[in-house]
Image 1 (cartoon, rainbow, N blue to C red):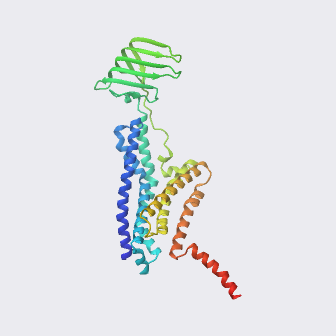
Image 2: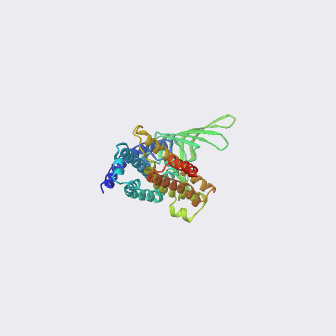
Length: 372
């Protein structure tokens, strides 16, 4: 049918253009954020692009949902504004007939959103957490780089090496500043140093240097040494830390139905339901006023998206805190939005409005009084 094919063709063009724009904006924002994490030492600078790729992949369900919503609203608004919808309605089509091609175009995108939020979202978070844990759990010796001040894993020591050998086991012009548990500060400098293993713990053996100790009262103590050893590394942690709930698979959340896990599970299911509800909302609420500007519908789209996703996060916190169960939260939030949008769609399909209902209600009693 010409009507269905024309709507789907325009939806495809608008959705593709919107997706590219949103992807570029999100990619730029996440790149700035990832570079900031790398500058703070939370992400390996050599793995910035890898972390960025996993992060963008995890944000794709939200990007696809917003792109689909904007595409439907923009397409229908353009058709109303150019009087195309009036022509189709005059030829016998209805608002339900508009919903059919929109849903036919949207269902593959909805399936992709559901699969990504249930499987790709936790997988991308797991990969990102693995990269961060591996970088944060590296030993102090791995942190030391020639010509750079590096902080230890505990945050209490700062190292500096002017240059080292090709093997990385010896260095020249070494500087170490540390803060002890009792509040005293130590500054150690040496002309050279090497790495030796004492048992299973690596030590830095310093030669020909001096040590400056400052206690809590401000007293100074200067000492010189020919050889001094300091433990700056620890045995590498085997295994990984407990994964965050966002990195757990959907099946693991089902098997361990704690309140926090059910909150995360409700968020994932809610993203898929939100995408479906946005399709209904777009078809039911999009009406273009020729006297109004083009930014009105776009403003409504962004406002509805922000409000709905904020309620989605609130619902996750409610389930996580035990205020609501998973089923009641899904029914209360997404079910109410679904039936409200469906009722709005049916009301527009039958040309019902509050004014017409009030006029009918007021006309009934008047006719009764006349006949009496």
